[in-house]
Image 1 (cartoon, rainbow, N blue to C red):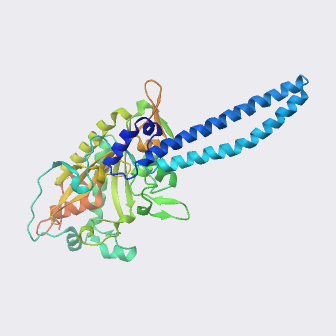
Image 2: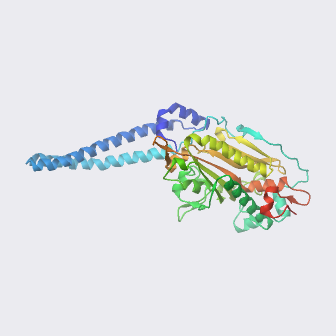
Length: 422
Protein backbone atom coordinates (compact mmCIF):
# COMPACT_ATOMS: atom_id res chain seq x y z
CA UNK A 1 0.00 0.00 0.00
CA UNK A 2 1.36 3.39 -0.97
CA UNK A 3 1.85 6.14 1.62
CA UNK A 4 -0.37 9.22 1.43
CA UNK A 5 2.51 11.58 2.12
CA UNK A 6 4.31 10.26 -0.99
CA UNK A 7 1.19 10.84 -3.11
CA UNK A 8 0.91 14.36 -1.69
CA UNK A 9 4.55 15.38 -2.02
CA UNK A 10 5.31 13.73 -5.39
CA UNK A 11 1.93 13.71 -7.12
CA UNK A 12 3.06 14.07 -10.73
CA UNK A 13 5.98 11.67 -10.29
CA UNK A 14 3.61 9.08 -8.79
CA UNK A 15 1.32 9.42 -11.83
CA UNK A 16 4.31 8.97 -14.17
CA UNK A 17 5.36 5.78 -12.37
CA UNK A 18 1.80 4.42 -12.39
CA UNK A 19 1.71 5.01 -16.14
CA UNK A 20 4.66 2.60 -16.51
CA UNK A 21 2.37 -0.07 -15.02
CA UNK A 22 -0.33 1.06 -17.47
CA UNK A 23 -2.60 2.06 -14.59
CA UNK A 24 -5.77 3.58 -16.05
CA UNK A 25 -7.02 5.68 -13.10
CA UNK A 26 -4.37 8.31 -12.30
CA UNK A 27 -7.15 10.61 -11.05
CA UNK A 28 -7.33 8.41 -7.94
CA UNK A 29 -4.09 10.00 -6.74
CA UNK A 30 -5.72 13.44 -6.57
CA UNK A 31 -8.88 11.95 -5.07
CA UNK A 32 -6.87 10.29 -2.30
CA UNK A 33 -5.03 13.50 -1.45
CA UNK A 34 -8.38 15.37 -1.33
CA UNK A 35 -9.84 12.64 0.93
CA UNK A 36 -6.84 12.93 3.23
CA UNK A 37 -7.37 16.72 3.40
CA UNK A 38 -11.00 16.14 4.37
CA UNK A 39 -9.98 13.54 6.94
CA UNK A 40 -7.50 15.94 8.53
CA UNK A 41 -10.10 18.74 8.57
CA UNK A 42 -12.73 16.54 10.23
CA UNK A 43 -10.22 15.22 12.75
CA UNK A 44 -9.06 18.76 13.61
CA UNK A 45 -12.67 19.87 14.11
CA UNK A 46 -13.38 16.87 16.34
CA UNK A 47 -10.20 17.41 18.37
CA UNK A 48 -10.99 21.11 18.82
CA UNK A 49 -14.55 20.41 19.98
CA UNK A 50 -13.35 17.63 22.32
CA UNK A 51 -10.78 20.01 23.83
CA UNK A 52 -13.52 22.63 24.27
CA UNK A 53 -15.74 20.10 26.07
CA UNK A 54 -12.89 19.01 28.34
CA UNK A 55 -11.88 22.56 29.26
CA UNK A 56 -15.49 23.68 29.82
CA UNK A 57 -16.24 20.64 31.98
CA UNK A 58 -13.38 21.64 34.29
CA UNK A 59 -14.66 25.21 34.43
CA UNK A 60 -18.12 24.11 35.56
CA UNK A 61 -16.71 22.90 38.88
CA UNK A 62 -14.78 26.13 39.39
CA UNK A 63 -17.85 28.25 38.68
CA UNK A 64 -19.95 26.23 41.13
CA UNK A 65 -17.31 26.54 43.85
CA UNK A 66 -17.19 30.35 43.46
CA UNK A 67 -20.98 30.73 43.58
CA UNK A 68 -21.52 31.45 39.85
CA UNK A 69 -24.30 28.90 39.64
CA UNK A 70 -26.23 30.54 36.77
CA UNK A 71 -23.13 30.72 34.60
CA UNK A 72 -22.24 27.15 35.52
CA UNK A 73 -25.70 25.89 34.51
CA UNK A 74 -25.44 27.69 31.16
CA UNK A 75 -22.02 26.13 30.55
CA UNK A 76 -23.48 22.72 31.44
CA UNK A 77 -26.11 23.17 28.74
CA UNK A 78 -23.48 24.25 26.22
CA UNK A 79 -21.30 21.21 27.02
CA UNK A 80 -24.30 18.89 26.59
CA UNK A 81 -24.96 20.43 23.15
CA UNK A 82 -21.32 20.08 22.13
CA UNK A 83 -21.20 16.46 23.27
CA UNK A 84 -24.13 15.70 21.00
CA UNK A 85 -22.08 17.08 18.10
CA UNK A 86 -19.05 14.93 18.95
CA UNK A 87 -20.47 11.55 17.93
CA UNK A 88 -21.60 12.57 14.39
CA UNK A 89 -18.26 14.30 13.87
CA UNK A 90 -16.36 11.22 15.04
CA UNK A 91 -18.47 8.99 12.79
CA UNK A 92 -17.93 11.22 9.74
CA UNK A 93 -14.16 11.29 10.33
CA UNK A 94 -14.08 7.48 10.66
CA UNK A 95 -16.11 7.00 7.47
CA UNK A 96 -13.79 9.32 5.55
CA UNK A 97 -10.73 7.48 6.85
CA UNK A 98 -12.24 4.10 5.90
CA UNK A 99 -13.03 5.34 2.39
CA UNK A 100 -9.49 6.70 2.10
CA UNK A 101 -7.98 3.33 3.10
CA UNK A 102 -10.23 1.44 0.67
CA UNK A 103 -9.35 3.79 -2.19
CA UNK A 104 -5.60 3.76 -1.64
CA UNK A 105 -5.57 -0.05 -1.88
CA UNK A 106 -6.73 0.36 -5.49
CA UNK A 107 -3.32 1.80 -6.39
CA UNK A 108 -0.62 -0.73 -7.38
CA UNK A 109 2.93 -0.42 -6.16
CA UNK A 110 5.09 2.09 -8.00
CA UNK A 111 7.58 0.43 -10.38
CA UNK A 112 11.28 1.01 -9.90
CA UNK A 113 13.11 3.27 -12.34
CA UNK A 114 14.76 0.08 -13.64
CA UNK A 115 11.44 -1.32 -14.89
CA UNK A 116 11.21 -1.22 -18.71
CA UNK A 117 8.06 0.16 -20.31
CA UNK A 118 5.79 -2.32 -22.03
CA UNK A 119 2.33 -3.80 -22.21
CA UNK A 120 2.81 -7.59 -22.30
CA UNK A 121 5.35 -10.42 -21.76
CA UNK A 122 6.71 -9.75 -25.26
CA UNK A 123 8.10 -6.46 -23.90
CA UNK A 124 10.08 -8.05 -21.06
CA UNK A 125 13.82 -7.50 -21.17
CA UNK A 126 16.05 -10.57 -21.48
CA UNK A 127 18.90 -9.98 -19.03
CA UNK A 128 20.69 -13.30 -19.59
CA UNK A 129 20.12 -16.50 -21.53
CA UNK A 130 22.09 -19.74 -21.66
CA UNK A 131 22.36 -22.06 -24.64
CA UNK A 132 19.31 -24.25 -25.22
CA UNK A 133 19.78 -28.02 -25.76
CA UNK A 134 18.69 -29.89 -28.85
CA UNK A 135 16.93 -33.23 -28.43
CA UNK A 136 16.21 -35.81 -31.14
CA UNK A 137 12.82 -35.61 -32.84
CA UNK A 138 11.80 -38.76 -30.97
CA UNK A 139 12.11 -36.99 -27.60
CA UNK A 140 8.96 -37.17 -25.48
CA UNK A 141 7.24 -34.37 -23.56
CA UNK A 142 7.09 -34.88 -19.80
CA UNK A 143 3.45 -36.02 -19.75
CA UNK A 144 4.47 -38.95 -21.93
CA UNK A 145 7.60 -39.63 -19.89
CA UNK A 146 5.67 -39.69 -16.61
CA UNK A 147 3.32 -42.26 -18.14
CA UNK A 148 6.17 -44.34 -19.59
CA UNK A 149 8.05 -44.53 -16.27
CA UNK A 150 4.93 -44.49 -14.04
CA UNK A 151 5.95 -41.31 -12.21
CA UNK A 152 2.73 -39.27 -12.22
CA UNK A 153 -0.88 -40.29 -12.73
CA UNK A 154 -2.87 -37.33 -14.08
CA UNK A 155 -6.03 -39.39 -14.67
CA UNK A 156 -6.07 -40.61 -11.07
CA UNK A 157 -5.76 -37.04 -9.81
CA UNK A 158 -8.65 -36.06 -12.03
CA UNK A 159 -10.71 -38.92 -10.55
CA UNK A 160 -9.89 -38.02 -6.94
CA UNK A 161 -10.26 -34.25 -7.23
CA UNK A 162 -10.24 -32.81 -10.74
CA UNK A 163 -7.88 -31.57 -13.44
CA UNK A 164 -4.80 -29.78 -12.15
CA UNK A 165 -4.31 -32.11 -9.16
CA UNK A 166 -1.74 -34.78 -10.19
CA UNK A 167 -0.84 -37.87 -8.17
CA UNK A 168 2.92 -38.49 -7.88
CA UNK A 169 3.70 -42.19 -7.54
CA UNK A 170 6.74 -44.32 -6.82
CA UNK A 171 9.94 -42.76 -8.13
CA UNK A 172 7.99 -39.70 -9.24
CA UNK A 173 7.05 -38.99 -5.62
CA UNK A 174 10.62 -39.68 -4.53
CA UNK A 175 12.06 -37.31 -7.14
CA UNK A 176 9.62 -34.61 -6.04
CA UNK A 177 10.65 -35.10 -2.40
CA UNK A 178 14.33 -35.08 -3.38
CA UNK A 179 13.94 -31.72 -5.12
CA UNK A 180 12.15 -30.19 -2.12
CA UNK A 181 14.85 -31.38 0.30
CA UNK A 182 17.64 -30.19 -1.99
CA UNK A 183 16.08 -26.73 -2.36
CA UNK A 184 15.63 -26.37 1.41
CA UNK A 185 19.20 -27.50 2.14
CA UNK A 186 20.56 -25.14 -0.51
CA UNK A 187 18.64 -22.23 1.01
CA UNK A 188 19.49 -22.96 4.65
CA UNK A 189 23.16 -23.36 3.73
CA UNK A 190 22.94 -19.78 2.37
CA UNK A 191 21.67 -18.46 5.71
CA UNK A 192 17.90 -18.71 5.28
CA UNK A 193 16.01 -19.93 8.37
CA UNK A 194 13.62 -22.78 7.58
CA UNK A 195 9.95 -22.23 8.44
CA UNK A 196 6.96 -24.59 8.24
CA UNK A 197 4.03 -22.16 8.09
CA UNK A 198 0.26 -22.74 8.10
CA UNK A 199 -1.09 -23.51 4.65
CA UNK A 200 -4.21 -21.40 5.23
CA UNK A 201 -4.33 -17.73 6.22
CA UNK A 202 -6.94 -15.28 7.45
CA UNK A 203 -8.13 -12.19 5.62
CA UNK A 204 -5.71 -9.86 7.42
CA UNK A 205 -2.74 -11.94 6.24
CA UNK A 206 -4.00 -12.07 2.65
CA UNK A 207 -4.40 -8.29 2.75
CA UNK A 208 -0.97 -7.79 4.32
CA UNK A 209 0.96 -9.25 1.37
CA UNK A 210 -1.39 -7.85 -1.28
CA UNK A 211 -3.41 -10.89 -2.35
CA UNK A 212 -6.52 -8.98 -1.25
CA UNK A 213 -8.26 -7.11 -2.71
CA UNK A 214 -6.42 -7.89 -5.98
CA UNK A 215 -6.55 -11.69 -6.34
CA UNK A 216 -9.74 -12.99 -4.69
CA UNK A 217 -10.71 -14.85 -7.86
CA UNK A 218 -7.44 -16.80 -7.92
CA UNK A 219 -7.60 -18.07 -4.32
CA UNK A 220 -9.49 -20.96 -2.78
CA UNK A 221 -11.67 -19.78 0.11
CA UNK A 222 -13.00 -21.76 3.09
CA UNK A 223 -16.32 -20.04 3.69
CA UNK A 224 -17.13 -21.43 7.13
CA UNK A 225 -13.86 -20.26 8.68
CA UNK A 226 -12.97 -17.27 6.53
CA UNK A 227 -9.59 -18.80 5.62
CA UNK A 228 -7.75 -18.69 2.29
CA UNK A 229 -5.59 -21.56 1.01
CA UNK A 230 -2.20 -20.04 0.33
CA UNK A 231 -1.02 -19.36 -3.25
CA UNK A 232 2.59 -19.39 -1.97
CA UNK A 233 4.33 -19.62 1.41
CA UNK A 234 5.35 -15.97 0.95
CA UNK A 235 1.98 -15.06 2.45
CA UNK A 236 2.19 -16.75 5.88
CA UNK A 237 5.96 -16.32 6.20
CA UNK A 238 5.93 -12.56 5.53
CA UNK A 239 2.92 -12.15 7.82
CA UNK A 240 4.95 -13.52 10.72
CA UNK A 241 6.18 -9.92 10.95
CA UNK A 242 2.80 -8.20 10.72
CA UNK A 243 2.35 -5.52 13.42
CA UNK A 244 6.00 -5.90 14.43
CA UNK A 245 8.83 -3.48 15.17
CA UNK A 246 12.06 -5.22 14.15
CA UNK A 247 15.37 -4.24 15.71
CA UNK A 248 17.64 -2.81 13.04
CA UNK A 249 20.51 -5.04 14.16
CA UNK A 250 18.30 -8.09 13.43
CA UNK A 251 18.02 -7.13 9.75
CA UNK A 252 18.13 -8.73 7.27
CA UNK A 253 15.65 -11.44 8.24
CA UNK A 254 16.05 -14.37 5.81
CA UNK A 255 13.54 -17.22 5.74
CA UNK A 256 12.77 -20.19 3.52
CA UNK A 257 9.70 -22.43 3.49
CA UNK A 258 8.25 -25.36 1.58
CA UNK A 259 4.51 -25.49 1.02
CA UNK A 260 1.85 -26.78 -1.31
CA UNK A 261 0.38 -23.87 -3.26
CA UNK A 262 -3.23 -23.55 -4.38
CA UNK A 263 -4.40 -21.43 -7.33
CA UNK A 264 -7.75 -21.45 -9.08
CA UNK A 265 -6.35 -19.69 -12.16
CA UNK A 266 -5.31 -22.87 -13.96
CA UNK A 267 -8.58 -23.71 -15.67
CA UNK A 268 -7.65 -23.18 -19.33
CA UNK A 269 -7.08 -25.82 -21.98
CA UNK A 270 -4.59 -26.70 -24.73
CA UNK A 271 -1.00 -27.86 -25.09
CA UNK A 272 0.41 -24.93 -23.09
CA UNK A 273 -1.28 -26.20 -19.91
CA UNK A 274 -0.80 -29.94 -20.42
CA UNK A 275 0.84 -32.11 -17.79
CA UNK A 276 2.74 -30.10 -15.20
CA UNK A 277 2.72 -26.81 -17.10
CA UNK A 278 -0.13 -25.33 -15.08
CA UNK A 279 -1.74 -26.80 -11.98
CA UNK A 280 -4.29 -25.92 -9.30
CA UNK A 281 -2.09 -27.50 -6.62
CA UNK A 282 1.69 -27.59 -6.79
CA UNK A 283 4.71 -27.53 -4.48
CA UNK A 284 7.18 -24.72 -4.09
CA UNK A 285 10.10 -23.68 -1.92
CA UNK A 286 10.17 -19.93 -1.25
CA UNK A 287 12.77 -17.48 0.03
CA UNK A 288 11.76 -14.28 1.84
CA UNK A 289 13.83 -11.36 3.07
CA UNK A 290 12.88 -8.47 5.34
CA UNK A 291 15.56 -5.79 5.10
CA UNK A 292 16.68 -2.27 5.86
CA UNK A 293 15.06 0.04 3.26
CA UNK A 294 18.42 1.29 1.98
CA UNK A 295 19.69 -2.23 1.29
CA UNK A 296 16.74 -3.83 -0.49
CA UNK A 297 18.12 -3.62 -4.02
CA UNK A 298 21.40 -5.19 -2.91
CA UNK A 299 19.27 -7.95 -1.36
CA UNK A 300 17.37 -8.34 -4.63
CA UNK A 301 20.56 -8.86 -6.62
CA UNK A 302 21.76 -11.35 -4.01
CA UNK A 303 18.50 -13.32 -4.32
CA UNK A 304 18.68 -13.31 -8.13
CA UNK A 305 22.23 -14.72 -7.96
CA UNK A 306 21.07 -17.29 -5.41
CA UNK A 307 18.32 -18.64 -7.69
CA UNK A 308 20.56 -18.50 -10.76
CA UNK A 309 23.21 -20.63 -9.04
CA UNK A 310 20.54 -23.18 -8.10
CA UNK A 311 19.56 -23.58 -11.76
CA UNK A 312 23.22 -23.83 -12.76
CA UNK A 313 23.78 -26.66 -10.28
CA UNK A 314 20.77 -28.49 -11.70
CA UNK A 315 22.34 -27.94 -15.15
CA UNK A 316 19.13 -26.58 -16.60
CA UNK A 317 19.10 -24.12 -19.51
CA UNK A 318 17.60 -20.86 -18.28
CA UNK A 319 17.03 -17.22 -19.00
CA UNK A 320 16.46 -14.23 -16.73
CA UNK A 321 13.87 -11.59 -17.62
CA UNK A 322 13.36 -8.14 -16.17
CA UNK A 323 9.60 -7.70 -16.31
CA UNK A 324 8.10 -4.69 -18.03
CA UNK A 325 5.48 -2.52 -16.37
CA UNK A 326 2.58 -4.26 -18.08
CA UNK A 327 3.64 -7.74 -16.96
CA UNK A 328 4.46 -7.00 -13.32
CA UNK A 329 2.35 -7.99 -10.34
CA UNK A 330 0.17 -5.44 -8.56
CA UNK A 331 2.47 -5.36 -5.53
CA UNK A 332 5.97 -5.49 -7.05
CA UNK A 333 8.40 -2.62 -7.57
CA UNK A 334 10.85 -4.71 -9.62
CA UNK A 335 10.66 -8.37 -10.66
CA UNK A 336 13.06 -10.77 -12.33
CA UNK A 337 11.53 -13.92 -13.79
CA UNK A 338 13.51 -17.12 -14.32
CA UNK A 339 12.46 -19.45 -17.11
CA UNK A 340 13.87 -22.87 -17.95
CA UNK A 341 13.85 -24.32 -21.43
CA UNK A 342 11.71 -27.37 -22.09
CA UNK A 343 13.62 -29.05 -24.92
CA UNK A 344 10.85 -31.51 -25.77
CA UNK A 345 8.15 -28.83 -25.87
CA UNK A 346 10.56 -26.28 -27.40
CA UNK A 347 9.36 -23.48 -25.12
CA UNK A 348 10.37 -21.50 -22.06
CA UNK A 349 8.59 -22.20 -18.75
CA UNK A 350 8.58 -19.80 -15.79
CA UNK A 351 9.97 -21.37 -12.60
CA UNK A 352 10.70 -18.37 -10.36
CA UNK A 353 9.84 -14.75 -9.80
CA UNK A 354 12.18 -12.75 -7.56
CA UNK A 355 10.67 -9.43 -6.49
CA UNK A 356 11.35 -6.36 -4.39
CA UNK A 357 8.14 -4.89 -2.96
CA UNK A 358 9.95 -2.00 -1.25
CA UNK A 359 7.55 -0.70 1.47
CA UNK A 360 4.30 -1.64 -0.31
CA UNK A 361 3.71 -4.78 1.75
CA UNK A 362 5.28 -3.50 4.96
CA UNK A 363 2.95 -0.47 5.00
CA UNK A 364 0.00 -2.89 4.97
CA UNK A 365 1.71 -5.16 7.48
CA UNK A 366 2.78 -2.28 9.75
CA UNK A 367 6.24 -3.83 9.91
CA UNK A 368 8.81 -1.23 10.93
CA UNK A 369 12.22 -0.62 12.46
CA UNK A 370 14.02 2.30 14.14
CA UNK A 371 16.90 3.69 12.13
CA UNK A 372 20.14 4.98 13.65
CA UNK A 373 18.57 8.37 14.36
CA UNK A 374 15.72 6.71 16.25
CA UNK A 375 13.17 7.48 13.54
CA UNK A 376 10.61 4.77 12.73
CA UNK A 377 10.93 3.44 9.16
CA UNK A 378 9.08 0.83 7.12
CA UNK A 379 11.13 -2.25 6.25
CA UNK A 380 11.36 -3.47 2.67
CA UNK A 381 10.18 -6.98 1.80
CA UNK A 382 11.37 -9.32 -0.95
CA UNK A 383 10.62 -12.87 -2.00
CA UNK A 384 11.37 -15.40 -4.69
CA UNK A 385 10.70 -18.97 -5.74
CA UNK A 386 13.62 -21.23 -4.99
CA UNK A 387 12.11 -23.10 -6.75
CA UNK A 388 8.64 -23.94 -8.10
CA UNK A 389 8.50 -27.70 -8.54
CA UNK A 390 6.16 -28.63 -11.41
CA UNK A 391 7.97 -27.00 -14.31
CA UNK A 392 11.41 -27.75 -12.86
CA UNK A 393 10.41 -31.41 -12.73
CA UNK A 394 8.99 -31.24 -16.26
CA UNK A 395 12.22 -29.81 -17.67
CA UNK A 396 14.43 -32.21 -15.71
CA UNK A 397 12.53 -35.16 -17.17
CA UNK A 398 12.50 -33.83 -20.73
CA UNK A 399 16.03 -32.46 -20.93
CA UNK A 400 17.67 -35.49 -19.24
CA UNK A 401 15.88 -38.24 -21.15
CA UNK A 402 17.77 -40.92 -23.05
CA UNK A 403 16.29 -43.70 -25.14
CA UNK A 404 15.74 -45.95 -22.12
CA UNK A 405 16.10 -43.78 -19.01
CA UNK A 406 16.01 -40.38 -17.36
CA UNK A 407 19.37 -39.28 -15.95
CA UNK A 408 19.21 -37.73 -12.46
CA UNK A 409 21.25 -34.50 -12.06
CA UNK A 410 24.38 -35.10 -10.01
CA UNK A 411 23.39 -32.75 -7.14
CA UNK A 412 20.16 -34.73 -6.61
CA UNK A 413 21.64 -38.22 -6.55
CA UNK A 414 22.43 -38.31 -2.82
CA UNK A 415 18.79 -37.40 -2.15
CA UNK A 416 17.26 -39.67 -4.78
CA UNK A 417 19.62 -42.60 -4.17
CA UNK A 418 19.99 -43.53 -7.87
CA UNK A 419 21.72 -42.13 -10.94
CA UNK A 420 18.81 -42.68 -13.30
CA UNK A 421 15.21 -43.70 -13.69
CA UNK A 422 14.81 -46.53 -16.13
